[in-house]
Image (cartoon, rainbow, N blue to C red; front, side, top):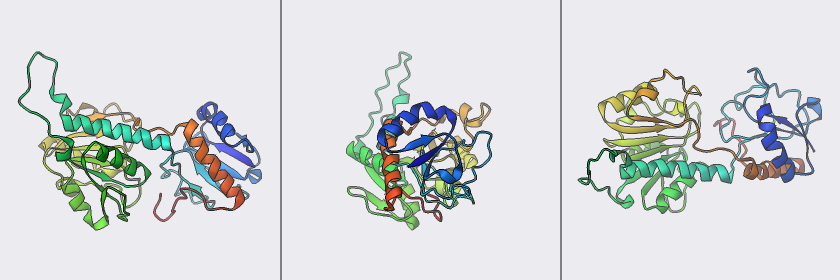
Length: 306
């Protein structure tokens, strides 16, 4: 099969060897006649220069396999008629679970209260995890991995998703029960995708439903939270802290108020990374399925946007 690597040039050296090892029957190319390709492996930033890729000449392509979990930058492309699959990578899920668990534990244990200044602060003992309520918004592959890791430490975990699909060992609330899910969230982990339904979902009204002193960890998409409302909730003390890894504009501009706010920790979109060594196998399986005419893994629902 002939496959176009429709991704930024900087990714080639890391991805090409892994993809070829996982799928040796594939001829992986960086350019060529669009009508001659059986599939595309895609990442945002292709083609170089900012123009959207025109998928219409790829008349033979049976699948467009995204290298990233988020597909909001491609799913609305009107020229894309081929099946689109998002990346669900075991390494991505593990990395997200580690990131969210680490920051949740930091908030839970109050690690920032122990300044190294010679003052003996032993008046406050943190509760056990079993006494701390955590809500995970978004119960896809990443959300399930994070919820399982937190529940394994003993946290009282509630999941929320639009569908409310059951997850073994985790109570999952459905769409209309979002206020209930937020009211439980002493620590709120946001892992929702960027869709028309989720943009600015956490506005002032919904942020007010969180318990006083709550911590927010947003590793989903920067569009999920109304920034003005979040800053106001932090200023009032209703939200104690926000750990933010994703933003509407990345890199986050140096003059953005998040950098200066004492209640915000900015991390530079490092919560989880797609790793070629594990993700290449997922891409290879989908390429083979496409060539055999079999159901594809993680196919994107265009109407829902993920």
